Amino acid sequence: MIPEAGRLVTNPNGRIAKPAALAVLLAAAFLAVRVTARPPDVLRSIGAVPAHLAGRFRDPKAFQQSASGQYFVFDRRAHAVYGIDQRMERTWEIVQIGAEAGRIIDPTAFAVAADGSFVVADAPNGRERIQIFSPGGSRLGGFLLPGRVQTRVVLDNSVLNGIGSLQYSGTSILISQPDTGALFTEYELNGGANRTIGSLRATGHEADRELHLSLNSGIPLVDPTGGFYFVFQAGEPMFRKYDRAGQLVFERHVQGREIDALLASLPTTWPKRRSRDGEIPLVTPTVRTAAVDRGGRLWISFVVAYTYVYDADGDKARTVQFRGAGLMAPNSFFFTMNGGVLVTPGLYEFQAGPSGSGRSGGSGLPAEARSAKAGGSGKTR
Image 1 (tube, rainbow, N blue to C red):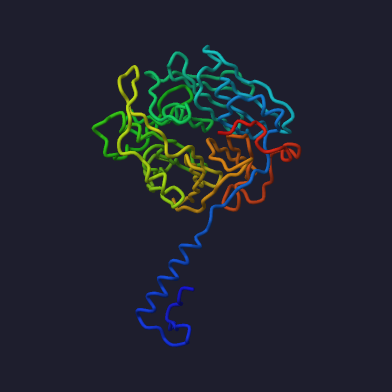
Image 2: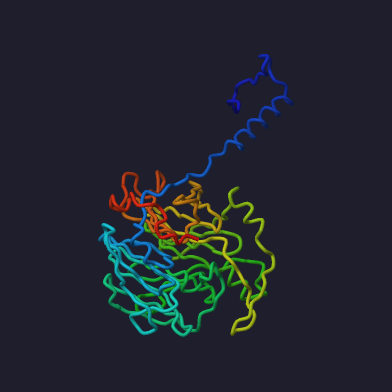
């Protein structure tokens, strides 16, 4: 044990330890603390979409729920959005494939608000488009962003930058847009840019504009307790907290022994690939996804199977791993009103735990779904 302050330290024979021996004891105590560092919290699934429903989906990229209890599944490969009733007994198609207004084609992102309205980002003819839908799938509005899709950060054939970073609060839409000179833009639902937030970070690659912008791409998030987070998705992992007015509150570098090997393997040069705009760097992410729970805690999931949870002061509170049919690296989170967290791949539900949102809430899934075999969809990656 580490010696108490003001107390003489004795050796095994009961004699007062000499300074050199005291140093050895202190070093041994320090190493013991290092060796016995707390292992990650392993969260085990408490439910999953039943196999007879999950088998309908080809590539579910988001699994979310409205306040009414209805579930939503965004199936990127099927170019569709599906609904699932609260009892998990049936599923139906809400939005279908198509390039015309009210349908989706080449979708990259999805988000649902508490009232059940949702947004989908897609790219008809290479143009970035945002559409807003009612819970039943009626188109409420939408707009095109200027320019064409610029692929910068890619994981498993999914574009994560630009509209791929979309977040929806029910009253506004956040998109990572480093091209503007700011980290992200807050859009009104009619497509008007309300404001830009956050200055770009220094990368050391300012001379290579495309690489500099790629390393400033990330995930903008609404903090339900007030303000915003921005998580840098490629290169050295970092995040920033902004207040309601868009002013910087703090910045944190993300570190931990679980991701030491990942950080050590980060490249210093990036291969180029040809595009219609010339050669651009091929950048893969460090962070797979991120979300803020209902208590204002930030969850960051990496491309390796670890998730860090940060409290409202920006201090790391937990290290988490998710286990469904096996250990998994989430590519989306959604925090339910009863303290659960819905995760893809696999269409699982987990209890967020003692540091998550809500201590007493049970599973939002019905008994039949909770007892279903985990991983029923078989579409994990």
